[in-house]
Image (cartoon, rainbow, N blue to C red; front, side, top):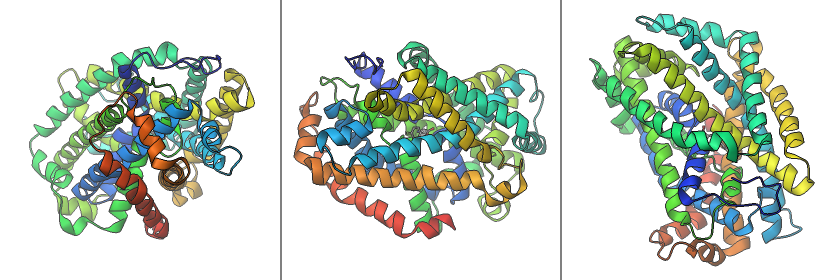
Length: 459
Ligand code: PFF
């Protein structure tokens, strides 16, 4: 991506460059940490199944909407709304995205910091030899509750993110992520093969992939829609910003399709690693799991060291996995910070360095209570502060953002103008009818239902 500071905002080198960058934003802790966590909290396969539908019908629809608005206007979200409908409150939707981005960054960086901490722990041999569940759980609990360690990790993550953003995105990370994301993919496949070949993988797999209809309820579906927004980086203008750098020659529909597909695949594979390993280690059955097992935010961090310890060359695989996880997380934090930075640079004429530093400091300060809410400080832990932040910003605000973007496209910009933009680089849009139906009806109705039942979500 070229530096938006320049008068020529530039564009991605190619369609593939866009797909890598957008997948880099989408694929991250949302797929590897958050998805299995929500599967565990929401009845297993019923959630997986609802998530797949949510990605296809809602995620893909909103992604295409964001990319289309972004490419048409070639602007950051605030500028984009202002460009299509100047001097109206629509630009508030852009501001909402900017604020949501800062808040998500504040707690997401804690989990990214855990990945950094685990990378270090793996190097120093904390997971050498056979790792048992008790062992692994104890290591996580101790680490997450240590305020100093967690805050240092938070500082490192936000510092790195701000540094990269201040330099423009093109340089290091984008070039590296082109190599490292495929490596992550291959490594996750290797780990998944190991997990499904563990003795007793069956019950874990059936919890994960065999839907039991009694598990479906409104809460499961609502969280699955929230997860679709979160994992695909939708609802706060990230994809609008990324779309603003796509060339008119490129096909927006297939680009959106590839990003949705790659993100979903990584999420599904992450679950294929986690559940068979967990069920094997603790000799669980689906019923036992639902009745007795307490799913915590540390799920992924407790399970991965176990499967890695069961691999030949586990020490090496462990270091590689946590390094890649960290990079996947960083390509996402960078995209979150890019939205507020692009706004301050484009609209307020700040320098990139000043914008990235200031937002970095604000996110760090906002992240402190989240950092202390996994055992560090009692009342924040009891209040489940980080999970509450995730509920409000990671689920509700993104869904509201998606709703407003859809309403804007349909009622203000108009579907026919969007279709015209989509037609550049795409002579035949074969999902057109479905997309128009979804953006006009399905997305608004689904999100409005989420808002009506917020209490169910929070409960
Ligand atoms: N999609 C990222 C992930 O799943 O890790 C998180 C994210 C990035 C959400 C950027 C929202 C966003 F704008």
